[in-house]
Amino acid sequence: MSTTEDETPAHNLPDNDPCGRAGLPRKLSELRAKLSHKAKQEPKFRFYALYDRIIRFDVLQAAYALVRKDNA
Image (tube, rainbow, N blue to C red; front, side, top):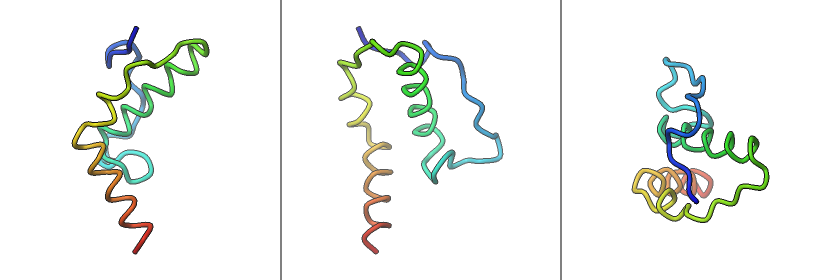
């Protein structure tokens, strides 16, 4: 069983914050919030299919930017 983006309600990220939380792109912040919400609502749920969420170009790009920033 895997999650879909429609399973959890929209989270209240401010409309005037295009980067979302922690300087991440808004779309990635929303993904993190939805996964967090699902994990908190169903503690016994197991996320077996997260690879497709991690390997996305925008996720990898944000991770690379954070690593570069930390090593600068």
